[in-house]
Image (tube, rainbow, N blue to C red; front, top):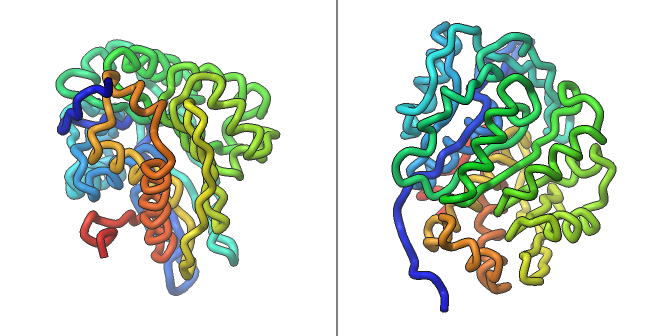
Length: 318
């Protein structure tokens, strides 16, 4: 018998909230834009009407204050952030002719990576139904170890969502990163990964989908850029959905938007929380397709405009 649907609760997002320096639309200039994969997911969730809690270390410097204002202005709860004495992390973003970004980071000794276990002791207080994390926060020490422990602890009461979101410039040896990915797959319920990430890790999408589902997650989705998404469930559903035609301005934040919209779809269906784990594992094909199509449409909207600018629920409904 299926578990009763439980609505409400909070989705906590743990990880970096950094500042991107991006090319201005006119002239040879750089603009400051709030960024960081986890922060983008938190904003994406809030814009889609999902209560989102940011678990981040925010510096009290001009860039950190701008990041705080951006998150709060989009309705992301900041009551569990940590005031950091270190400086804000930065990423220099360049975009190629196809709108695909590359990143050059300034992160040595900055705020995002200094987590301690004590700072995360109350991160799951209250009605947290899901915890999402990924990218640099889970691979950059000393903070990566406490964050990984948080995800393991969260699995007892919440859905765990994970996006490797690989950054080759900073993550080091792909084989070592893949070993860490495998550790996290053992506690994750929902996994989103891009085909670009898999290529860097030395994996093919179809093979990775089967291998990763066998390691524990309920749902794995492999985004394929303009070619759509490949996905499956632990119970054996497999599907491939087409891409959404769109004029691409750039793809900054598109994967983060996909993760946010996928979680929002699960939230709206009351499928988040540890009590719904079995229901996630046995999603039917029609529901999985609807979730993926919803996430792909949201990501396409982000691709149609500059930067990590995920849609609101009203925009997505239109």
